[in-house]
Length: 260
Length: 260
Ligand SMILES: [Mn+2]
Ligand SMILES: [Mn+2]
Ligand SMILES: [Mn+2]
Ligand SMILES: [Mn+2]
Ligand SMILES: [Zn+2]
Ligand SMILES: [Zn+2]
Image 1 (cartoon, rainbow over the protein chains, first blue to last red):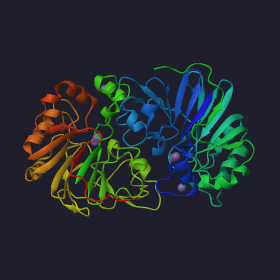
Image 2 (image 1 turned 90 degrees about the vertical axis):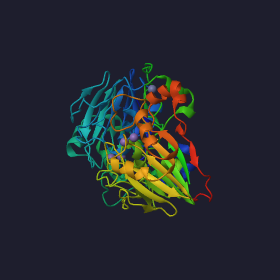
Image 3 (image 1 turned 180 degrees about the vertical axis):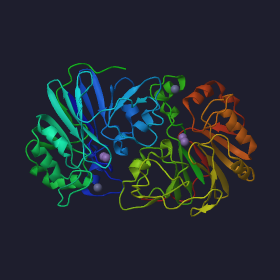
Image 4 (image 1 turned 135 degrees about the vertical axis):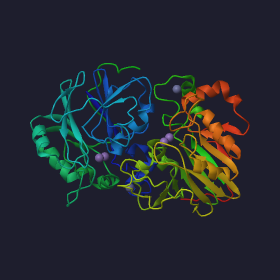
């Protein structure tokens, strides 16, 4: 099983429009420091699942047949906006799994086009993805949001964004199982007052330390956290790394990818 | 006054995802045949206004300070999606004018960020844009939609999309004034049954012939109309042209553009 971070930014991304902080200027000068909308590609066997569809160039990135489907954490625009265009494809059907959000994003449910929203996931109920078991876990966010535990090829990954802390049931559920990889919302530099809807670094580290995690990766990162990390990245504990767009975690993919 | 078509496609754009018709294949092979989300740039004096924000790369295309503001025809995703990211800019305010749609798109009104939606336009009431008079005219579409008459530098342009035909009041209002340029919704090849929400070519030509138009430009074009035009473009009447992305109409801009 392999997870590639396609985007690691928060809603504003990096660089932020009209921001000239050190992180935003660095990202303009050096594209490897840019952070796109928070999303990932999960590969196992011959399956390739997109985790969140906030990228707006999905039709170019993923030619027909190259994706098995899409798993949504939630339907905020920075995680679902790419669906608004992709849906207008023809002569195919792409499953979009996610939480039972009655609203979705804009008119996506009303005009789903090629997107098939019919398969609903249920919190804490394992679902089969042809070679991977995915278990949704509720997160603490301003819109109904699921994190996911993915189990395939002897590995267990958790992908948890957007969230501030974890709901007690989710925390207890995750504490019971060792994780090879935890990708976690860490939007802000350490703050004394609790942020809303997203972790700052202090709360992200609290969550990491409360679980049994081999490798933790921070994502959904703001320009403000990037500025802080310029001086303080060396203070991160062992086993905690900052995600960046294009970073790959896990095993090499064994089988060839599905072809169009 | 100068109008540049930034996008001339319908909601699905050209090429359509997973479509292999002659028009979609041509657009993949030759980028000049691609059609992005329907939008335009209007320039007069030192002002530069974006007409519809369906492009998702607005932050890259329009550095801070390069736009005077945005004029929305309506809030369907293919016309407004680019606002979902642009709003998260910092330390500036960008006016977004448009119809009094109570819903907008997704959570744009709830979290407007740098976008200022406070100035509402009223049908048939001329508004001043520092060197241009813009008059909204209601269109016939599935969501509240305005077309616009722009008057500046001795020229009068009308930009009318999305619409099927015209409401009688709008038709009467427009028939009273000669137009140097008419940009008009023409989504489909000629059909016998009336299409919903958008013009086919027959209805677009009916509208053009009912008005006093020097030059008509078709926009919001589907791959299906492009296929039809491959054989039939030479049957278009004099004074009617098919828009394409990047096409420029009107006078050269006299003053320098606003700089960042
Ligand atoms: Mn987010
Ligand atoms: Mn969110
Ligand atoms: Mn449209
Ligand atoms: Mn529309
Ligand atoms: Zn910044
Ligand atoms: Zn096609």
